[in-house]
Image (cartoon, rainbow over all chains, first blue to last red; front, side, top):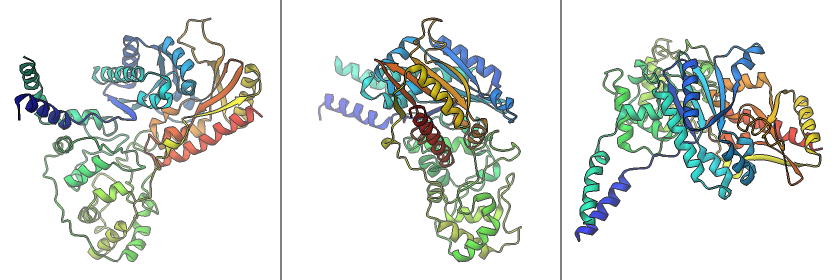
Amino acid sequence: MKLRQAVVLLACLLLCGMRPVFAEDIIMTRSVLPFPEAMLALQDSITAHGYTVSRVQRVDVGLTGKGYKTDKYRVVFAGKIDEIRMLAAHAPQLIPYLPPKISIFAEGEQTILVTLNPEVYADIAGKDVDPVLFKRWESDLRSIFHDVNSAR
Amino acid sequence: MRLICGFLLLSCWLPAAMAAPDGAGLFSRYCAACHGDKGTGGVGVPLALPSFLDSVDDRFLATTIRDGRPGRVMPAFDALSDAQIRAIIAFIRGWVHQPAPAYSAKPVTGDAAHGRALFASHCAACHGSNGEGGKGTGVTFSRHRDLPIIAPGLNNSGFLRAASDGMIRYTLQHGRAGTPMRSFLEQGLSEKDIDDLVSFIRSFDGHGTDVHKSGARLSATLSVESPYSLKDTVENVKQAITSQNFILIRTDTLEHGLAKPGEENPHQVILHFCNFHFLYQALAVDPRVGMFLPCRVTVTERNGKVTISSINPEYLSRLFNNAELNEYCKRMHGVYRDILEEATL
């Protein structure tokens, strides 16, 4: 075996050995921060990543207003107007899922964040939209979750 | 030259590729959100409970991580390597500093018919009459926090693959301190009774909490064309929401909060609505239900065509691996379908 072939073979073996991180349909993270601080960290990171928080659905407020006992629970919607417009125009089947959202809720003295992997949106959009957009969303979401997860 | 560069690249890459997996890091990434960063539990079971770790062998943990629990929230981490799974288990074991138990692979033999009767009288109250397990997941919405665990689903293909007969027998004999699971010997059952129970549990078909991942055949969106104008359709949807016993919360545009005031597209209208009792029940079943919230129907007008659309909850529910949640999504699918139909009559 020539040296060049050996190098290529070794590289291939290494690539095969390094299994890719599997696609999670639901991305979750936990913050050791109490809910109010974690919520602030989340909104700060969303903004720092260039997205606009369009609305915060106060699920817990609605529930307690109707007499149900619940811990803090919010749904944060965020996006970029040009991307939302592009998606609504090219993939109208995606409109009911827009803008993307993150659920954030208290668990005792800590906080849990949940969101759909944007790969799910890519599946819905199909060939109508360049999947690179959703890959970037996923990367940004993981970065945002990392920010909240590591905030102290 | 290129060859040398290749070697240099490989020499940088090799140590990272060959390094032992970081159990703490893997646990933090894949497990901590549900099980807690110290294994104290939450959405998932409290792994750090000494009576749990003292009674489960590494095969049980590895198979559970690899296969998950179909229909019981715990996903299958089937792309993790054996080395990564071993690293996670070693990290988990580090919480109690006790050696992992080892169980014989020899099947337990007993009288499954007698075990069925014992199961009905001693186990079904917590584990369900068909071994489907306790309701809900582990966070505040579903239970009081003084209970550290939800009774596992025994009639579950993931559980039955992971648990050996010996492990089940040990758990029945000794119980799990710190959980409602008490020693059956202390409750007066004999060793033979316990073997009979093991035989009955082993006779489960494993489909008690199955979820059918048929989402690939489902449409992600429910959609219908309206014969009415945008304005009239919006009013029709409002009435349909009310007739379904839901409360209209708010009406705004898709671009609300994103576009500058006055620059929002008025031909994309979202109607948000809720049934708080239904919501409360759904949150008790799965705290991740926020991914479905708030209930909303979108009315759009494009090229003179008015369309009403919503998410398809049954399409989304397949992502959650929660058989209980599937039932709620089925009901919500019916609500959306009825609203769309009623608004376009």
